[in-house]
Length: 122
Picture 1 (cartoon, rainbow, N blue to C red):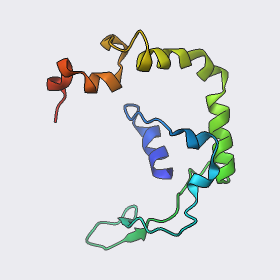
Picture 2 (picture 1 turned 180 degrees about the vertical axis):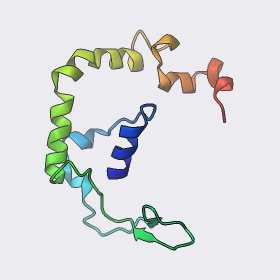
Picture 3 (picture 1 turned 30 degrees about the vertical axis):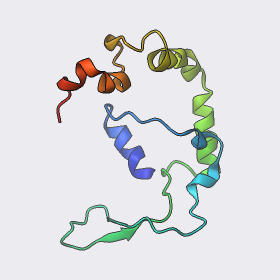
């Protein structure tokens, strides 16, 4: 999650949505069963250098103290006046009247609409 957070700060075109558990279930950030999710290269190390780190625990952004604080901050952001003032626009874009209006930059339907699939670079 930490790396995704950094990417989102640097790339305004990177749009992601959070699953509902990000707003009420801090336990999703714990690997209680010690599952191994493989390995990934360490930051700054090339594959020739062999720098690898095991993927098994969620790394939260540096600004949060704990998984509980992270969830609480997500809730506070979702319930903020800024989001409350604009949430209806998102609902209309995804489910409502603006669903087919491509001037609204509806990335979800633009990528799925049959008329526009040919315009998407592969």
